Amino acid sequence: MLTKRIIPCLDIKDGRTVKGVNFVNLRDAGDPVELATLYSENGADELVFLDISATEEKRKTLANLVLNIAEAINIPFTVGGGISSVADVAVLLNNGADKVSINSSAVKNPQLINDLVAKFGTQCIVVAIDAKIIHGEWIVHLVGGKVPTQLNLFDWAKEVEQRGAGEILFTSMDNDGTKDGFANEALAKLSEVLNIPIIASGGAGSIKHFSDTFTIGKADAALAASVFHFKEIEISVLKKELKQKGIPVRL
Image (cartoon, rainbow, N blue to C red; front, side, top):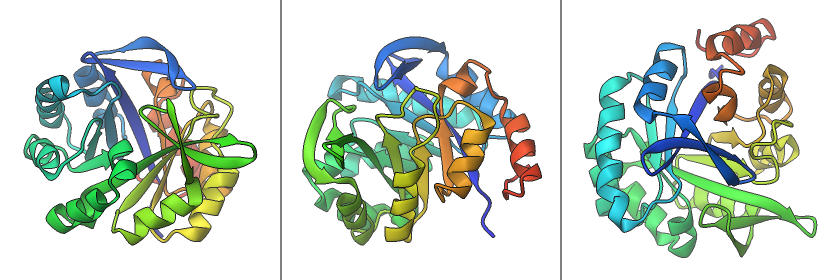
């Protein structure tokens, strides 16, 4: 049985780690290289790094920061934010990223998924999907959750898989930063319609929330930020408790 993964997320703005609630009200959470090193040493399975305000101008800074983090850690490392071409991905992989995460660019140009998979392989292409419930339907949002689309979460996730993405990173905007638990009903439905791994994101506030997303939500991995950044949950303690509950994790 595949082990369930615990993944801290570094949301980066202007070179610092930040965290907000429902994608707004950001506060500083520390130096990304220091946090990445700490998580790597404390048992994180992977690390996700998202430049949440990426612009063309900041791409070089992003690449340098990616290199600094890659040199400091020894776990798989996914990078996202402002990626819109094969060339962007090549730069990040050359600087030490193991995988890349695309979001808005994939919706605007779905062929990009196919192109990246053809060039770099399924295993290193993650498609991130930010969605919230509008009039009873899960609707995909772009640009850090600011712009609603016409896309239904489940239809878009299926298309993403068909185009060759290796993994989905689903963030519930309604749950993000609330610490009320993950969107397990939506996650369970995603696991029914997809055959690729699903990373749950948005809402972690307790160890029970992690166990619930693996059992009820059927997630393959759980991503969290503030509970780790502000030391509300220690990854080593979390994994021991999950193991005691019979959830397969790497200790």
